[in-house]
Structures are given as C-alpha cells and as structure tokens.
Amino acid sequence: MNQAEINKTIHTFFSAMNLDTKEISLIHDNDFNHLVVSLRISGSLEESLYEISTLIHRDIARILSEFLKKQHHYHKDIVVDINNQQIKAINHIKSMAEIVVERVLFFDKTYEFGYLNAYERMLIHSYLKNTKGIETESTGEGRERRLSIKKHS
Image (tube, rainbow, N blue to C red; front, side):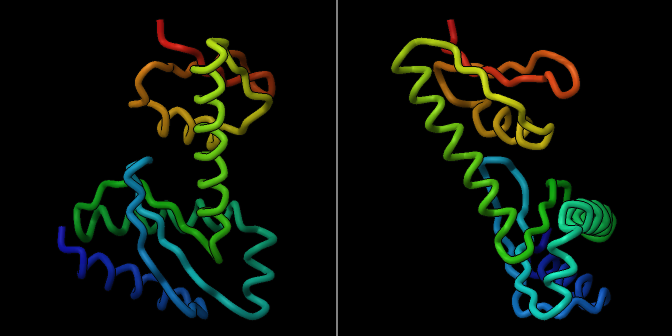
C-alpha cells in the first residue's frame, strides 16, 4: 500500500463528485483502526450535506472503501468527516468511555449506558477492547439494547 497513491485516489474520488472541497486530510485513527477522511467544504452545499449528513457520510465511506480495496487492496474501515463533525463525535465517545472506565475502576461498580445507537456501541467496544481490567457487554434488543462496562473479574 503506497500512502501517496491512496491520498491521490481519495482526492480524485472527491473531485469526480464535484464537491467544492477547501481541504482534504487523512487521519489514521489507531484506536479504532480506521482511516478518517476529513473534508472542509463551503457554501450552500455545506448546509445541504449537514441536513443529510449521516446518509452522505456512510454512503460515501462505503463507496470509497470499496474503491480503495479494488485499487490499492486497502482494507481499513473508512469514516468520512465533513467539517470535523465526525471527529468531534468520535472524540466525545472516547472521552465518555475514558470517564466511565475511571468510574468503574474507582467505585468497582458496573456502569450501564443509556440508549446508544449501534455505531456508538461499536466505537466504545472497539476503543476499550484492549483496556486491561475492564470488559464491555451489550445486552437487550432494539431500543432497549444497553452497553455495560464492568471490572474484569
């Protein structure tokens, strides 16, 4: 995998979509083992994308991921971030998980999160999977599904 070729491919990909990008940067997030493609866009397109951001992010990420797999055999998950919204959300999840881990270890008591969507639960599971002394567990179904963090026995 040649990083320069991947970078060029990503720039070409977004140019072909006629997105008015001010900046495209690539961030390798080793905590979650994925690549964050961070876009800075402007104008009315920004407002439009913000309204449908979740669909746009996931669809573009899936298309870009398949494209990179075929072109460069690149097999990491892709997160498309527009104007730092995804990075802020991911960093918030990391901070929340770190605070809960400290709480669980200090009070020696299991902590159960309120409702989290599947993506948020996956991020916390992934982020904490190698943390010594704790374990994560999801239980329940649908809107009643809850993530618990407890001290490893």
